[in-house]
Length: 215
Image (cartoon, rainbow, N blue to C red; front, side, top):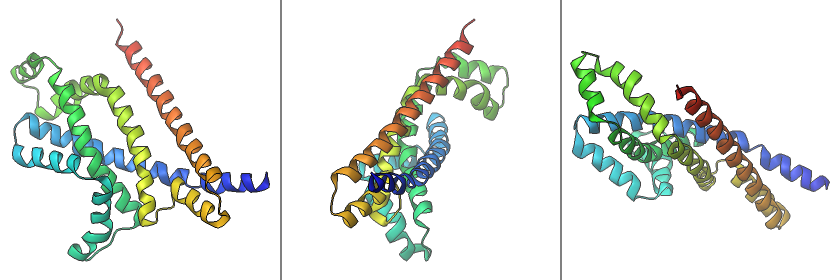
């Protein structure tokens, strides 16, 4: 029992690291996803935007992570830390998927809203900030929650470059004790609990938003 408690505590110390990767990745992904979606809407640098989304979605995340952490230093002469490299890689990867999610949300809005905002002389920035994006986010909110959950599970790849996340810590315990089943089950339990918490918070936010929208 003492060993089990120790294992749970040691593996649990990786929760913060995993959440930092997820939070940082989603923040970058949302920011870049919005920028890509706006550029698409106005057909600005469209070949580059579509090419970026296609390449990012068409190549493995582990390859993108390896390029940023292992290959990029040879090109720019600077190697980011493991956490920074992970956040950048997960953020860039997530941006392509969020851009696609936002595209579907934008296309679901009536075109008249864009025309009305233009007719009223509303500046483009405020049109997107106060009119378009709030509606889009509400419409695509379940898809965004799914993207957060997917990214959380993908952060396990950080263990490949030595990141001390939940998965890496379970592997260390398994190697030390020559027993894999229990440490991996503990890691799985932590991820499952985190997913349940994200789903719960997502439902709460969605319900409160829907309630606020009722007349």
